[in-house]
Length: 378
Image (cartoon, rainbow, N blue to C red):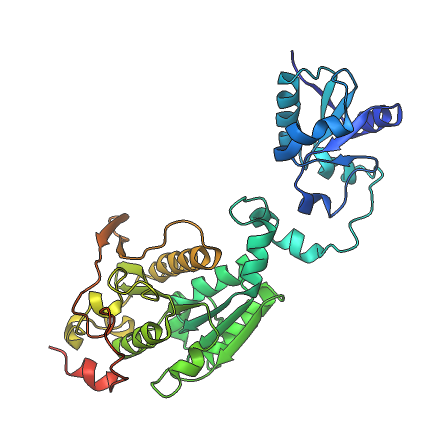
């Protein structure tokens, strides 16, 4: 038997005539306001709780959600349990509200900006309110506000990251704008971290942006990493990459690595904290830096403008997974991307048992002159 569908106005008429109306949205959605007179039971709890609201299967029962899809699912589920006077409200609460029908007041404790801004995250069981609050408490350190840092920062702040510390001593140059989307033509000559803070604060004023207009060095790296949960490598040179990796190994911080060159990029997660001998670090991948002529930077070799966008978004994705404790991070795996072939390739990356930095039981050897170390490669 087909499920009857009602307009909100017809549902209101029947509600006033004695029918029961049940809102099957999640509690955080209902906190923003429900159709006046509705009872709230989330779709996942319907089978257990419906008898407390509609004890007799022959009572008239109307179901409403946000737009009509979940209420129809709920009606079909209850029909299978023997309820037969069922109807779903077409257009759901959105249409009910748009037509000016009476609404119950939002819950007194509700943070409307939080619920509206992150509505799509809150609907994911893997995130929900608890996960979103966890993101708001999280603190990430980003090395570089350039090609990789731009997309990674944009999406992390949009996703609800609470604090982002960005270190970069460079200024915005016109040649950056082809790929460094945090910056604008009007901010050429401005500090990159100040430009980034302007863009990110405009996107999500809930976030706290900490611009550090400094080059990352052995003298300041540990203070820059203090209190952060995850570090993102958006550097464009080998000395800083080795330095940040070494600091992350010493301090037990997960490092989300990314690099781009012409039409190719790669990313991985180096997370040896508590996993020595199992999870590799950057030095397991590159025990020694390649000679300078084999690894020119973007200003020397060029780079497809969208390529850092792809790799930076992958870095943002891995960062969110680490912060939320979901999915399978890229620990022990190096993901390559070839933009010309539009092809991803994965390489297994084992921990090096003889790594000079992260081998089990090895003491931290201390910071070195990383510029000299990289200049002497080859």
